[in-house]
Image (cartoon, rainbow, N blue to C red; front, top):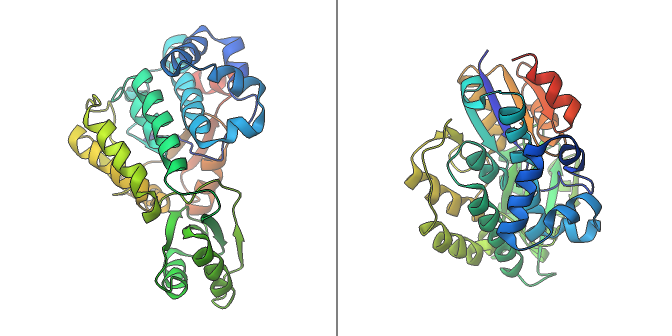
Length: 313
């Protein structure tokens, strides 16, 4: 069976994430300790106990989600002897999840990935003053419809498509006034629902250029190896293995559209029959069900789920 591994992005975090893994497996505890040490922060305590408001902060949520995903990978490989590179053909991650995928596939070390994501979160938060940017979900919209909406709503301000999540869900991002106009325009285009999202910054749009610049500088000095499996880039929606290309694409990803729907369609075209979400939550499995009914979606985040799946491969 041709299999892909998926790594969740922001929005999949929840207080208590990783706690059961840490209780059950030494490999998971080692991951959380290494991330804590790399960041000089008790991130694991924040993950296990909250408060939720602090965990949701972009600079915490990004490395925390990565840590849980990598913990699942290490548990599978070290505790159950499952070689993911031998059991899969591709890996893909939603936004920050692309870093989790790269770390899981040996392209970037765990401590470097934690530091890069901490910087990414901080830079994205600092890029735009609070309250000047916004994001909104257009439900029941396809990408072409959403592109028409943002073009009509921009009026010289920044607003664009941030996430093409598939299944009729497109997220837009930009200056608050332009996003609010886009919500009104969407109502005239037959789009089922348009709603502001409770986010702290307008991700994946041109307003994030200062964060892209910060990541370009950081990635220039980062060590990136060829991954054990091709990583499906959010920017190109196809598998990438060249470290130089991967670095450039991670920079472009900060301001660019997350082409998740196209990425899943590309995987289908490569013959992928099963997609296994590794980490916190089941968001990506849910999206996949709406994008393609033929690829089997699985989510592994809890000890029992991991153990059960490990016995089948």
